[in-house]
Image (cartoon, rainbow, N blue to C red):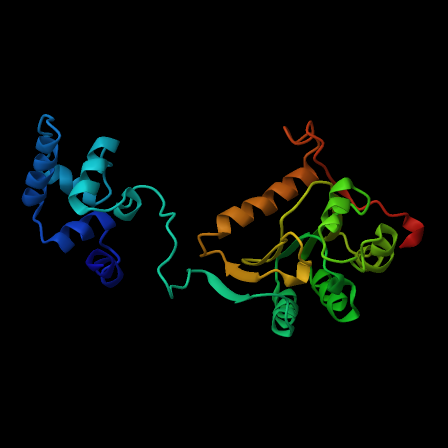
Length: 289
């Protein structure tokens, strides 16, 4: 599209002006085109002048919804393409969404190496949320977390309460019996090693949550790894997407992380507490750690 090419070549030009330039209209010609749209609807002419169009195109003023609708008719496009609202349409074939750094169709050796590298590279904070990966308790990865905690990186791990109904429901939809389906084994082989490693550090906290989840998040400073949990699939069978804070998906997932931290640190975070949604410190017997 010519308008999009103009925006790419001249990023200082806002979408509304780029569409006029693509049409080859002067502002006076655009005003007449708008008049024709109003005439076609039997409406009074709007009397929009060139200075008003200039202010719209420069982002100094915003046209009302009626004017936006008429501009869309003139340009045969949608409001989001003109800069009014968000574009929810899928990207064109072959397009790469900005801010996506990597992706894998399922857990692979490369995706596991990516995890190790992102843990090691964290400088400020790490947050993990979801059905905690068995690999976290392996010596190789556990030592990376320990190293980051020793370096002063804040680590918050949000793990599903081993005994809550939501965890039971999750394993009901696994395609076969999972190795860590038994809460006692999960606590003994995964959670206790993490808790023991975290004990010496004030900046490494483990929390439990007691509500259903459909994805997991691993955040390392300004990058995230996101993995969905599907029905009839193991967690390792889900795709993994790595994104940074330039991605349009970032605000959504970042808001989830902030919500978890708020649940963990706010005594009465409503309406969630009333609904029985809780995030609490991992309840382990001190003698076990």
